[in-house]
Length: 115
Image (cartoon, rainbow, N blue to C red):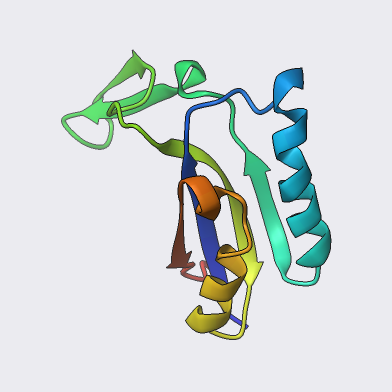
């Protein structure tokens, strides 16, 4: 069956902070309910912990790093699930059950098998 990345976009929060525990309940419930199709995933630390990497001049060029994300936005990538679903319709139905879809967005994209 194909794999789909379900990328979560919502407010930039520190999901490891104790005050987020109540909000994580819905994610734990989704994880238990969808355990049969979840092949991976993770929550991400806030964007202030990000480092953007570029290589000037292409491969072998100078490595440039910038603290933080590439662009400032209202909603940021906060985590992802890797879902094994029969088709896009099933992946979309599962994504609608992820709490991020209720107050942000979940982008569903097919994964290209790499070897």
